[in-house]
Length: 154
Image 1: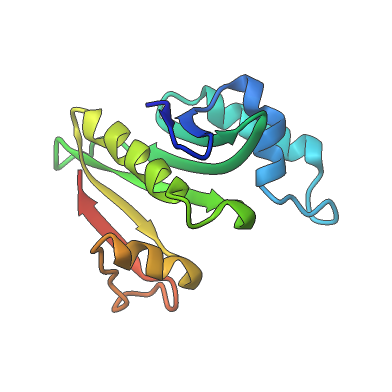
Image 2: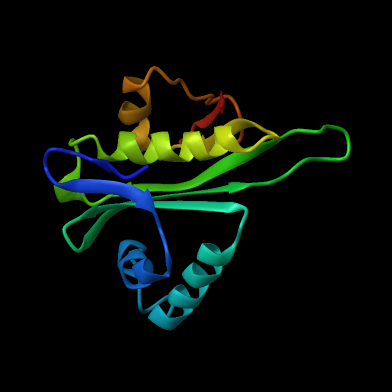
């Protein structure tokens, strides 16, 4: 972890010290949800051992975040999948390799889980080019509409 790019950003596992920055990156709409409510939710996610939250930090500022969750095993199989819930980089910090580094950290986390076999997510239309540049192709033939489903082995 802790990959430092020549432009001064670093990717690392998030901690409670990042709470304020994570709330800011959540782009909370105060009309829809209070900042305190978002902060409580994020604090709970940080404490959840089945979650992986990694951040990109430039100086003292968080400029990107990725969050995934391992769902565990099932009755009929001894393996499970992790789901990428969020991958976001501030617009002014895009096209510098940050999203790729965040994605790689989440995939490495999933790969290190002994029972995890796949990483899955749905892409926003604006992120499709990013995933395609990595050689990944989404499945648009499901019920996700304009948000293609991806599943890759870890």
